[in-house]
Every structure is written in C-alpha cells, then in structure tokens.
Image 1: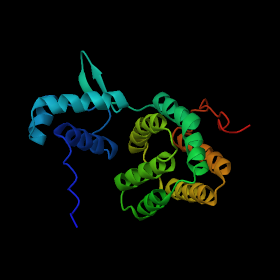
Image 2: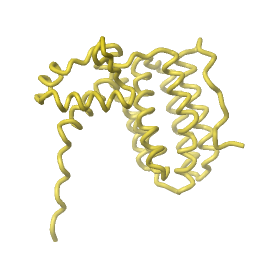
Image 3: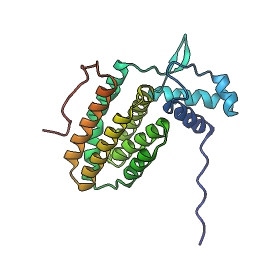
Length: 224
C-alpha cells in the first residue's frame, strides 16, 4: 500500500508571516515596535520580498500598521481599538458558534484547546490556547468567509490580551466561562451556547478596560 506524500513545506512568506504573528501574539514584539524589512530578512535568512509580502498580509489582518512616514510597526492597543475588535466579535462569533452547533459539527479541537489553556504555564501559552479555543468554536460554522473574518478579529483580540494581561482571578473566571460555553455547545443547545459566548466576550473587555462603559452591549444577533 503506497504511503501518503508528505505535506509540502510552507512557503518562505508563510514561514515569515507565521513567525511574526507568533511573536506579536506572545508579546515578544510589542505594540508600536518597528518592523524593519532588512532586519527581519537577515533574522529569518530570506530576501526582503517574503518579508514584505508577510507584512502586507499582517497589515490586512490588523496586526501591524504601515505608514508612509513611520514604516511598519506593530499595532498599538488602546481602549478604542479593543472596543472595535470586541464589538465585531459580539456581532459575529456567537452566531458562528450557533451555526456550528446546528450543523452538529465536532468540537473536539475546542476541548483540546481548553485542556491546553488549563495546563498553560505562562501567559503566552495561555493566550495562544485561548485563541485556538475560540477558533475551534466557529471553524465548522459552514461559512468560509465568516471564518476568515473571525480569524482576523481573533488575532487582534489576542493582541489586546497580550497587552492587557490577566490576573489569576480573571484566568479562572475565563476558564470557567469557556468550560460552560463548550458544555452547552456539546449538549446541542446552540442558542444557549451563543448567549454564553456573547456574555463571555462582553465581560472580557469590560474587565480589561473597566472605565470604558461605552462598550456595546447589543443582544446576541441570533436572539429574538
């Protein structure tokens, strides 16, 4: 019986993109930090072309900013930016989860990410595991465009988390909320799972920016 062909290696651009994204989301590259093409090319051992293409893609997802005067920098985070990101998540992510549940799609990846988050020994690993958890909730919603949009927003939310950090109390609260969201989703109650996810997302930004009472508290779009 023939063996399966090995998966192709990612392109140089994809390699650079993944490495920069990981550095941003784990906090090794800080908001406002300059990203110089020549320095990155030397660091990764590639030409400037894949670096330039990777930075363009990351600018499209909102993780970096390109300026005619300042060059490329990691996107800065403030309450207004966090409000925008979480407002979009409030509108789209609960509905995507509701659709995932309605399609009876498997949620094993979400369970695995939840376990990784609970075992995470540092903030960087926790943020990446939480990012995978949320992605697994909507990955099988059946709408590829919605998935791509949420992937970009999820990266920006992870950037917010990298800057704001979390206390032990908030980590425990968020873990408990994740467990409840997943329990409801696996029980087949898509509306209850969507409502719980909506409340979770709204609560995260409120805890990170308690003075920002203008955060949109719209009802879950699937409700009513």
